[in-house]
Length: 346
Image 1: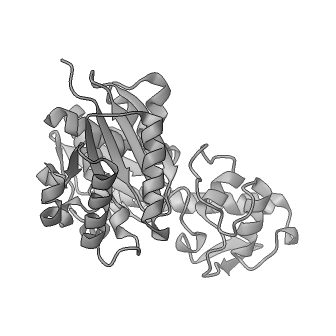
Image 2: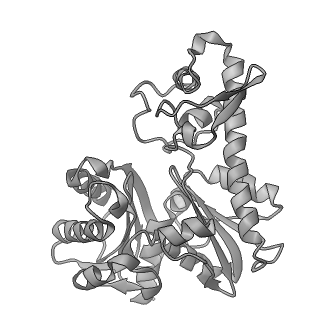
C-alpha cells in the first residue's frame, strides 16, 4: 500500500546523515556529510541543505540526534532545543517528527518536555528496526567515533541502559570508533623495539591513520581533517603514528609502522570483543543469535562476530533497499531506521 515518502535524519556532532524512503517503503537514497557542529549551527544548516538536495524531498521528516552532546550547547536539553528549532527553520510547514526512544515520535512542540528521551536515542531507532525483523540478535553498530551494542530478544530491544550514562556503565556504548578516535584513547603503551613505549597524551593521530596504513579504511569513512591537517596518505598516516610515540617516521622502516598499526587495530578489536563477551555473558541471547552489523566501521563488526562465532547480517539487508544504496543504508542505519519507523507509524 503506498505511503508518504519520509526523510530520516540523524543529526550527529561530527556527521549528518539522511535517508529517503519512497512511498512504496523502499530506501531510495542515503547520504552522509561531515558536520563539525562544535564550530556553530551554520555547519548544521549547510549539511542539511546539501543532503536535502542529494536525497530528494519527502512529505514527512523524522529526526534523531546525538549532536546535542557537543560543547556548542550549554546542556543536552539546550542542544535538543536548538536542533529542533533549526529543523523547524529549515523545513517550515513540513511535518516534523522527533524520535524520543521508547516514547516513540513527538512533535516539535512537544520536544522540549521530552528532551531527555530525544537526546542520543539514535541507537534505539536502529535496534527497533532489528527487533521488527529478527526475533533475536545482537545489534553492533561501529561508526567513526562510537560503538553501540544492543541485544534484541523476543522481538524486543533488551538494552540495560537507556541514556548515554547508563549505556556506558552497562558496556553498551563504547567511545571508540574506526575513524576519529585519538590513538592515545586506545592504549596507554605500545610494543615497540622490544619495549613498552608510552603513548603521548596529544591528539597526534587517529584510528583512521591506523586503518589507512593497513589499507583497510573504507572509502568515505574519514571525512574530517587529519589530526595535523595534513595529507591522507599511508606515509602521512605513518608520520602521525610515529609522532604519537615521540618519534619521526624516518626513525624506523615502514614495515615497523605497519606492524604497530596492526597491533593497535588488534587492541581496538579486543576491546570491542570484550564488550560483546560481557553483553553475551548475561545469557539473554542464544549461542547462534546473529550479529546485525551497521556503521561505517562495520568491517570491524564482522571480525568481532567471526571471533565470537556468530553469523553476520548486514543492517541494509533487513529492509527493501535500492541495490546501489545497500552499503550506505548500513553505514547510516539510524537515519534509515527513523524513516522506516516513522513510515510504519503513520
